[in-house]
Image (cartoon, rainbow, N blue to C red; front, side, top):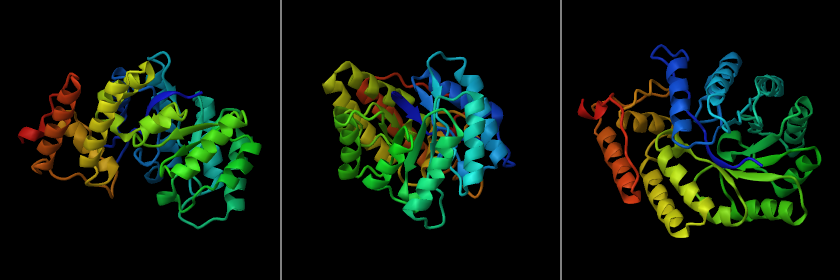
Length: 312
């Protein structure tokens, strides 16, 4: 079972739009050092749809180099593409590199039927021996998984489901069906929202964007949860939800870059057409103040880098 705090990590680019290998690996290493258990690579945060196939494979390789420095850390790359051929190719490349599992959003942009999506996942599952997770993200894929579709995919060998919309009726039905009927099937929530209630129903892993810029908070919350320290877990959950809401003023990828800069770390650039606000924007100082307040509330040590744009 995949367990713990996973990050849908951003991919860092240079000003000219090329992949910034050094900063991307620094960021991966920094998150591992602060308690993140695994990387969900080249998803929405990671600019996967904005990257070439070769660039995505390169990010998998870079991540593997870093993960090998930290025993017990793992990689769960997102391999989903708009077409089946590219998705299967990425799945095979990820398996060769040595990841624990892969995830894939349904083929996006076009509106597809259940049968088309099932066939898409069947070809991914048949192409590799490692676990395959479907990724339910209707906001970006234009496809919403139903319980019947999940059941069809389970019979084909689907290992689990990463779910972002968190429809309680759907997720509880999928999760409890797997538990009651002893299915080897895992639900991973694709957000920190709902972590505590879903933990109580058996979920043991979440993919949280906050890990990109405040992994200390997510690490503490999951630690207290797994230890059974309900009071501190609930306190951390409330702080996390409040801080998360304050960072949802723009696209999550852009907000992650801004939050890293607010903490004094050089987070490079997102890939265009995404753009960062100028460093003179007062939002950077506001973000820094909000993060520091959250750390203080939880009694966590706040550390900052030397690239201090909040004094610009």
